[in-house]
View (tube, each protein chain N blue to C red):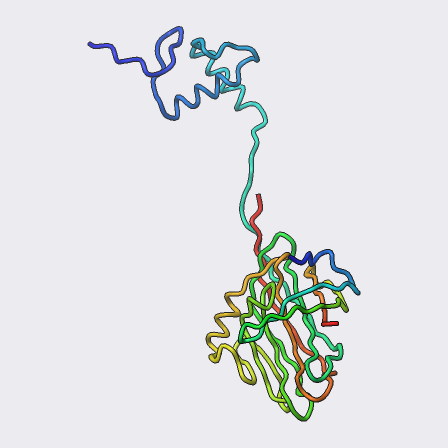
Length: 206
Length: 48
């Protein structure tokens, strides 16, 4: 019978063939030998098995990875006076550090104000360039953005698109969610703006 | 980029406002209140 070509490690009692897992185990066992061992020299099968056994008996490092999910009920109402003729207030909501948040529930309402003009609520992420939703109402009506309803002139002009935009919002601690209220009526807004959020926050842990 | 965690009441920070035609206006905002709700930080601000 023709002798197979050598493609592995030679022990004192024969050959270790195998270029896959077996080879890796062998290399690992060699690496666990006494410091200063000549890894270029063949090891006996018993020596290699002792190396593996020592490795298994030692403290093995185990690392768990996964994800954490939490629901956050956030009330961010505001009753600070927002002046007539262009006054604004921005409410910035940061996600918990290390988490990415998305909106599960959303409700924002500014009560009717003034005798002329309009007022509006806008939802954006990070800054005004990433605006998702806007609801602008005339003075006699409330401006509101809700999960399944929006009052006033809404942008996008389709409540289903607004729902989708709200659902697609993602924000973090460093790139937060913002609700901007602008009062372009002729009277100061002194009514409480109701802002209620239900957030799902998710983190990858390692 | 704004360091939202570093802001405290009374701080002034700039933002950009953009209208529907693309005109950008730099706005100086003042932090008027900061609250924490279950670990979520909420910052209220308005232009100065």
